[in-house]
Image (cartoon, rainbow, N blue to C red; front, side):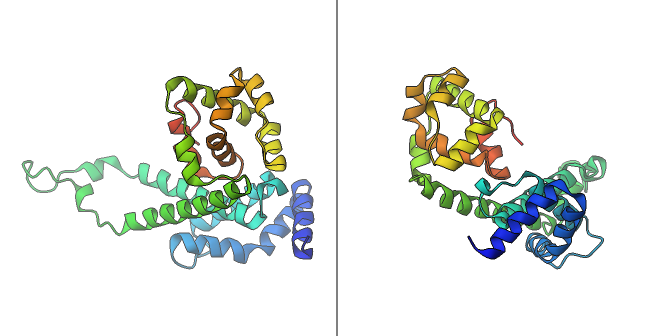
Length: 243
């Protein structure tokens, strides 16, 4: 293993136990945190920017939740930073003043509100950040799937089509999310523990076997900071968390 990687892993391990070591690690990687923030907001962040504070907190969260099974740390931290910034932008947009934006402009017949006149200059920034973060997640997932001998096209072809099989997969995914050792074993062995998963979720092993490639992708998304893709997948599963 690369000496730099070995040292970083040791520093992360120490930072999990010692708040001062955690502060030192965050300070050491401030150029990285600023760089990831700049990629998202499309300019150099200022010390007073909320986005920079959010990125620092996301880096702290990455330290606390990281394990070597989750891949390269900096890539993991970058995904976390982008996900937190996207969440922040979405909250800010939801929390904008409803009264002022709904105020009619012109005649009632025109039906134009103040929101319709707001320049789109605010929105491309959010959309660009979301799009770039999504592309990063897809690229990362594609690389991870290759380790399992699975391609993204396989996932679409292998997705459950019937409500009964979809419900079985939903139960299996929910059980895996509630039992971290299932996800850890998946990452460690590059195989789904189908027997344990079927027994724990109370579904037929054959059903899960038929949709193994689909489950590989869904369970991987549950392991490694794929915030955007996890939201979409959980909506498809109809009943899983959207987080």
